[in-house]
Amino acid sequence: MKKNIVVTGIEGFLGNYLAKTYDSEKYVLQGTYFNKDRILPKFLLPAIFLDITDKKEVFKVLDKMHPDIIIHTAGNSNTDVSENNPTQCYKATVGGTKNIADWCKLNYKQLVYCSTNAIFSGDDAPYNETSIPYPINRYGMHKYLAENIASTVNTHLIFRLILMYGWNYSTRMNPVTFVIKALREGKKINMVENSSYVNPLNIISCCDGIWKGIELNKDREIYHLAGKNKCDRYDLALKVAEVFDLDKSLISPVPDNFYSSLAKRPYDSSYITTKAEVELGFKPLTLEEGLSLMKKEENI
Image (tube, rainbow, N blue to C red; front, side, top):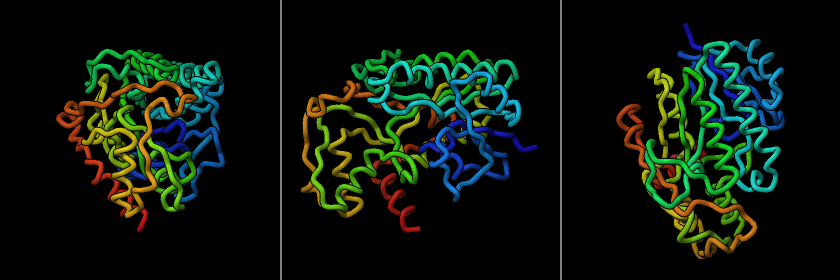
């Protein structure tokens, strides 16, 4: 019998791609959404509106959908929004996760939680699954609290993701699509250099790792998913320009204090992905491989 999976926040960046990449021979996929305008007809699946901060509605909707597994991607995903609106974002990210987790506990269902590299300080990279989290901004703190809540579900799986890139469709731009759009329009851009190091994760590669964890019935585990290459935003932009045949001269390096209004980011939150590689067969893509995959996807 096929497992029934519900993706919360199916209208988001990760949710869209989970809908695009799931195996319909193995799973029945449904979703919940908060922003109806972001639901894509090309990936249309059964989906129900859900405000995850409303516990009564969470229980009502999930009782109706009766999932075997919930992949929880909903909640605030914007670091600066969390810094500027901490109460609202706490309610969505932490409170919403608690509501989902409580339903899973009561119904003995698995919760797959999507966490982040922002839970780390950036002072002791690269990080593996046993590294000690120490968030330095509100977004990282909210996600770490939510991760801890998810880990209290008897059957759970946690994926700590890192800067993801791919085509946005209806969601907000990521650093890669921002660069592509700006350079194609001939605009000059400033990108932070010598700070905010990550190993960017292609969104399709990310979904592959998540689906492998579910397919292999992994339980009560944490996995770090990331790309193969570590870079700052400036190096990332240069590689994007190279792969997409765009003008590198439009890209200027700036220090991390150039954008003084933004929330503090970890200096280096790059990952070690050995555990995912060994246990899931996850294969980190080089930045060039991931961007080339994007380029190929655009031309299909």
